[in-house]
Length: 220
Image 1: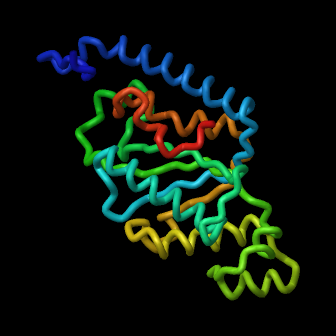
Image 2: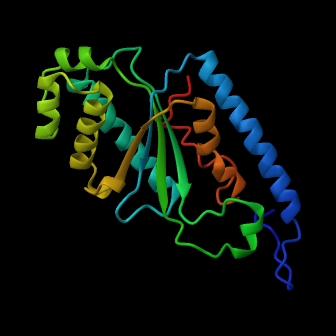
């Protein structure tokens, strides 16, 4: 049986209310599971990153494949030459469709959209100073950032994110070069970030839990 709601001739969904209730329950249980996982496995998520792609993927399987490559590029940045420790940093991937309605009242307004996908990431991080001192590799940062570092007026998180952004934009062709292509923030409140990353469960735009890239996310 199809998971899509049956649309009546009057334009109303026969099982709309049931789908909304089910999505709300699914979202609550998913967030509860992920929040408990953060505590149980002692995840130390530090950065919340959003990728907006040039010529974005429209099919979820293709996005999963791209996520695998993105993960490799990120890990290669922090652990060059293939040396990845057993306690390496961990990453979660959440896919999201453009044009997703945000509440029940918007359901009637929702039109068929292009289905293009963007990506949210929850990411742990390495110790910045140790990483800079230990790894002999090139990083790209602005001249102003270098001057700030010389003057001692800098934040290591900003240096890492700037260098990581430049690295990803150089290696992921469809990421683009604009500031909007990759937006990074400190996590601050992990529960709020987990809640935000699971908003796709309210939209009925994904089948089951497709918005979570279970294959590429470090859930263990």
